[in-house]
Amino acid sequence: MRDYITMHHYPVKRHQIRWVYEKLGLQSLAPGPHTSKPHPEHEIYPYLLRDVEIVRPLQVWSTDITYLRLRKGFAYLVAIIDWYSRFVLDWQVNINLEADFCIETLERALQQAICDIFNTDQGSQFTSNGFTDLLKEKKIKISMDGKGRALDNIFVERLWRSVKYECVYLREWESAGEIRDALGEYFQFYNYERPHQSLGGTTPANIHNTVIH
Image (cartoon, rainbow, N blue to C red):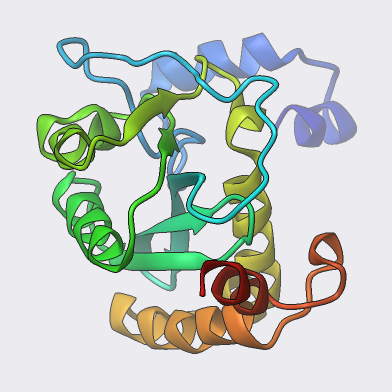
């Protein structure tokens, strides 16, 4: 908006546009950049992965939430990824940001295997007792990104980029069910068929399953 008004009318600053929006009670139809917000009463855990060398599957898992634009509204995607192999262990699409769908995804992932360290951001879904208690029960160390440090969870950020440019952005979606079906096919492709340059041109499944078994 700042660029549009500057181009067609007269120069303005970003803070001037923000001030006018606030006075008029205007908000963007798109969700804000933070899909998971901190809860003031939840415990925050320290970041454990600075300078840690990732050398094998099941050493570190992490998760995050991203939004998916539908023709009318939004849905939300959570996924759990193994840092070493880039293998997507489990995922789920939901129409709201309650913690339940994140907890359900973690439960399914933990039925497959257990990692040493689990990393998240400081969002309320991941600091909730329901989520952290599952990790504590399995004796998994809990690590959380520093505030405002998206690069602390860089492997999930790279996953979101691939998901959106190779699947989500290719068409418009009518419903959460429709995009869920498409993502099911995409994650199968991502894990078992899509070669990764960072993995020496092989697939996440090949690295993940070969080393584990």
